[in-house]
Length: 323
Ligand code: AVI
Image (cartoon, rainbow, N blue to C red):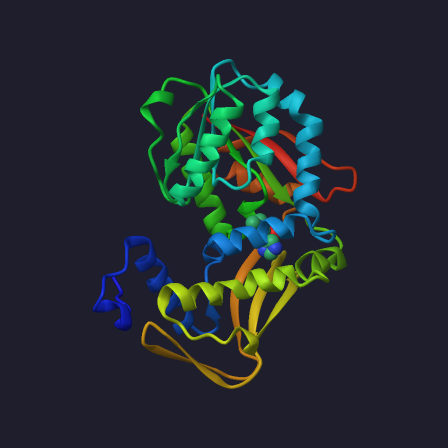
């Protein structure tokens, strides 16, 4: 679909990425209940807000996963063959991958991310700090099939998917991502993956309703992005952030709730809201070890190793491609 914003149409058509964003937003706001994909949180401001979230006292996943990776890096290093290429699905802050790069003898690193600019900056920093590592950034949407660079075709592959980003996929999407990662990495591949675990509901609630309101700003920022990139007129003061835990579905849901009856225009289209009506902006699935093992098995992987922190808040797994 190629949607052109009426105001901007005279000047220039939307680029491909913005056009996909436009199509998804129009489709999501036309549904009932309304929804938006969490992948659109991460413009520059959203990525910065997410970095702030990772430092919040209530948001346990990042520091817990970092702790597990630090504690287990030696064990991970021991099962990684010489001359391996590490393929990271999504390229956020480099803190986590640096733990692996410091401890394991990787020959190449392939960060895959939709944002080419971000990738380049990340790749430059890693080349500086790891001069013996070959870095081959790939600008691609890692949720769809993509090709690895020819330079790594003969190397053993290890995928890296930290942060429980898997939890932001619907269960079918999670399975199809795992299958596609298995296809891309090839037979004999392994994968290191971080997965958030089910736990006390209060801990989950607080992690997504932080006292400083950073998660609320992160959630509302998607409206700021729509206003800027798609000529929208969302009044962010007329919506509130809400995060709830759905126990049956094992997921935190984030919503933006309309404070009043209102009409919002995006790309020349009108969307009306009733008071209290929601836009569902994110699901963050929490797994049990058994449910994650079943997901991995059903999508072409066997679980080789699983580690959690002492309080069983978060898990890191090494998977092996089932041949
Ligand atoms: C990136 N992702 C795993 C985060 C999560 O916990 O689902 C995104 C996030 N949303 C609100 N806070 C953090």
